[in-house]
Amino acid sequence: MIMKWMALLLSGCCFASEGSTFDWLHHRGPNLDGIVFQDNLILGSIREVWKTNVGTGYSSIVTSQGRVITMGNEGGNEWVICLDSLTGGTLWKHEYACSLNPNMYAGGPNASPTVHNNRVFTLSREGHVFCLDLLDGSLIWSFHAESVGAKPPTWGYSGAPTVWKDRLILNVGDSGLALRLNDGEVIWSTAGGGAGYATPVPFEWNGQWMALLFAGKKLLCVDPENGRERWYVDWETNHDINAATPILIDNHIFISSAAGNGRSSLLSFTDIQAEVVWKNENLKNQFNTSVFFSGYIYGIDGNTGRHARLTCIDSKTGEVTWTKDTGFGSLRLVNDLLFVLDHEGVLHVVKAKPDQYDDVTQMKILDKPCWTVPTIDNGRLFARNASGDLVCINITE
Image: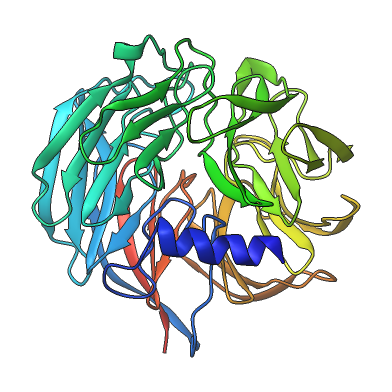
């Protein structure tokens, strides 16, 4: 299938392993889909290994070569912090001035780091872009989005930097931004404040490379070589909150939003247009992205602070197969297991079955609110809450 082949290609050209096969180098995982398959994974007792605090924020966690990297904020200073994965001890921290800016939530950084070729790439809520050395945190280059006339959306930049070939693609400006990996030079850019909150998705289709950018009012498909628009689909929501990353399903795209007139849709596409296959309100993702597995989409339907539920839908029809009142949260898929972290800090391990909710085990691992999606690496799960408590959990025997 196109998607499986594309995922393998992306893994090789953009996210080649730099240590463990299962390093989680990007917000959406090794294949940009929120999924990892691990051989010989035997689910054991869930237990805490270590716990620390990394500062206020919602940045998720990436891992590489025994290092755990995320972002936080305290007292108007934001930082990128690197921890030892075995002990939780701080290995290095890159700090810079950046406002906390709470606005109906705790504030702090939203975007997650990306690791590529022993470098760490980050995007702050205000538009600072940094390239840091993975081993010691030293600054290699920096850039600021305001230099190309881009303005952050209401709740700050949130999409993770995404590597494609020799460049870094960011959901910045009205239609994206691409910087050269080696030195941060602008390859192509767009000005304005029309950015969405989702992570860019590069992919190859019929021999042509494209990139999806979920902007504030539309889903854009651009040429990652030059930033030129191929097609777009209007998608307006209250406060321009398009935050869940689009999901590629063979020659289709699933998009979802929850703010105001929330809904989801499956689109078919070519290199010049996209058309709606179905559209409904059965799975509305506010900002935590769903996962696709064996013909079905699993995700959190609903908003923070309101009634929300874990939901499974048939990707071909959009029809609901089951729901479970877990409340708001986020999820990853490991093999056939969903690791769901709810708002209250309870980790649910659930079988990814299309016909029924099958809860394997659960454990309270953090205090609320937990809005950030957890990360899986070599039998350990890393999770955090808004106040910056970060915990390492052993999940295998």
